[in-house]
Length: 561
Image (cartoon, rainbow, N blue to C red; front, side, top):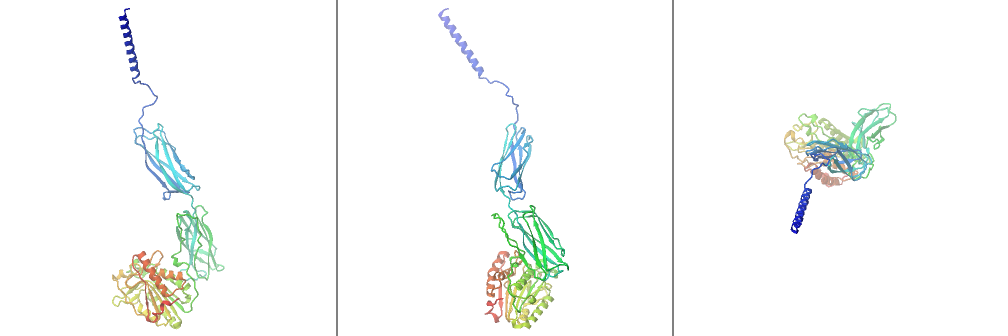
């Protein structure tokens, strides 16, 4: 072969080889079709909506013995079905004492479908105080999973309730001496002094066969929250077969756990003055969430009344006129005098126990008519006239006052007297003169009434449409008059304490001083406290005043009871 032909052959071979290699390389870079063993699917898209935590008593906290619920909706916003869903719930803070009950396997959720999820949490008595932190995951068969936002909430360990009778009172409809065969009333104040709430509270009484209940003597309270108190009243009567002078009333007080109540016996006696008994306070667990104040039956001034020795020839006339509506059809209930009877009743107790008045020297009226008031005033003035200068007199009146529109002379208003006709009302000038004529050595008068026509509610102004500045009379004899308000003001109530503002602080000073107070010290105390409290609780001014006769103007401040 010629040399030129050989060269041509070699070049042709090389070209063909390069072409084949390029074709093979090109073929290797082309995509290839093959099966991977999976179906083509439309993916789901899961979202969580309406995530909530709710517990049984509404305090947004899980307490021992309580149940709660974590709930939410799972929404599929994708184009494919979410298949074979499973849920896991984990508490990450290691809080013990909570059981979580929930549906682990969830049905498939079709496109645009929704599934409601509810996780019930139940806290047992081993629950510890802390913060629970729950993580919730929902797994989908093809890996389209959902992580729900974590849920965190406070937990509180078990706090024990403590159900007690914190105060009790035996009382009579009239009088204060209990006799055989006479109906009497037992008033009980039940309070939860523990830090935990109490459920299904039961109060029941037991007694000997010679004591009979006249009204209900078993009571149920569905829930008594920490610090909460409830008052109950039962009427009893003894029959003629009752032996001895002791009256024993046993009681049982329990709650749902039957371990945080008490059983004991209340005792009173026949032929003995009935007293209010205040139970000893038992301190519960030291727990900072609440400060429990032990309840009282009525106001603080109605309890723990100081006792002093009796004073010979010391008399008292005490009147509380509250119910004007039932005697006068033209008046509304708003024109009654709130708490006037309670004012007078408590003032009577202070007279008998603290101020030295003997029972036989006490003259006491409530909701008195004109006839009754005139008769009682005449009776006590006749008695004091007989005693003369040895006598001392305390007069207390709570009720309506009203001035004559022409003379401006003030009157005390009996419950059956209308402001349009004062002919049978008690003219203050006449009352003062009658008392002065007795020649008693000391006459101290307390008037928790106003004489402008205003009163503790709307007063008598509403019946006449006027308000008059009363005339202040000139006093004779050994008389000092404390008035609850000045001439143009109203005498107002202290609703939280169930008394008139003036009477409340009058009694409070007697209580604090145990009756050892001069009239000068008493006036200073009333001036300081009544005016401020009236502005705070009634948003109106009320300034007590004193009026005295010229005879005692230099001496009255040193008077003592």
